[in-house]
Image (tube, rainbow, N blue to C red; front, side):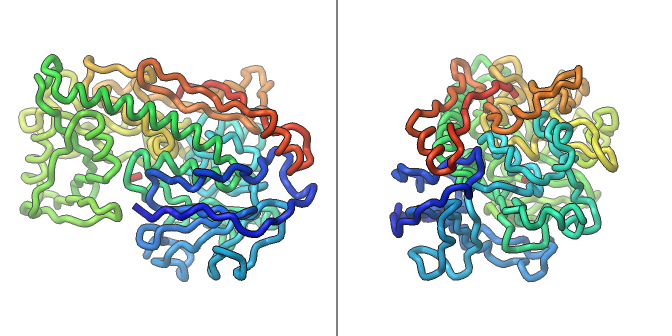
Length: 509
């Protein structure tokens, strides 16, 4: 685990009036415990009086060595970030804790460019979507974020432009875009390293580790209290589901008769692949099942590669490794097929598991089961939008922010009639039931009006409420105190603070 920094209080900086966004929160006045990052592995934070210093992990948080569009950043460590309160003096490297290679950002962030869907889910959870200045909506599956493009079409610009950073509309906005949330591969790269913040949630190996990235996003908006509240409730719901998984693991009344079922994630392209990513292994284990284990030595026709999370991926050549790969499929009680997921999520175009992997029901018990225990991850996708009729898949842009929903769905897939969550299935669909896929559009946002009277204003500041999937758990919104409201008023000179009243919306490797 990346070492946790001590809480520090240094020089006092006085805020100036008029420099903060009207909806912004003041710098946290109670710093106790705000540096507590319990699960996330790729970042840490140290607090000073009116600024925060984010340190990325030296070993895990690096720009992709080959794929990043900026050659000078490839393979380098992501530098520290210094976030300083609006209206205060920008810190210098002579001040306590400020690294010499740091990037500086004034907070709360007024205008953000979102380069991919991962950060967007956390922005929506925190209710700070009013800061979004530019985003590519085409692969976003959240209904209310899709409605954002309907209400404020100027926010949508496709990253498919030859160089969207050179797009005239970007150029006009360059002066007011405070931050560009990208990833290790530079998705949505805007061409300006000083504004680049890699949101590396998909590199964090654990399910709750990824969910805790809500605290990272909160740092840019002074929303630490809200983030802590949301994460604690997500964690409690996840652990309640995990406890049910532990009970089911040895329950003799299930179809597995007290044995522990085996689950495998597979993919097919130029090779057939078993990808035991750490977060997938954790989800399987916490669901009360076990991963189909890989051997110590790669079988004939197959090779191993090591992932950034320390796990192994096995790739089997076609047809040389078919026999070995089929033997792994034969061990699984439940199979998650990730093949051909992008860019076309139409279930009618799914070629069938037997065809894709060249196997028969006699060889693969999960396929022979009635109904087959073969699932796909595109259980919820967005409707087609923009050039190429692009679609988003919720497993890619939302799942990381709600591991409790992912765990609940996996448990429903594994345990079938022996387990039902209060959320219902969202991410997975059984291949024998193509109608189970859910296609969502902006019409699914509760602020949408079929008569064209969309409540666009409420999109700004609207908190998306995370689903609670274990029986008896209901999300409790965080109450805003009078003191907190007065603090925000003084700091931002704008009257009362943003209300935290929420609208209840159930909702790589």
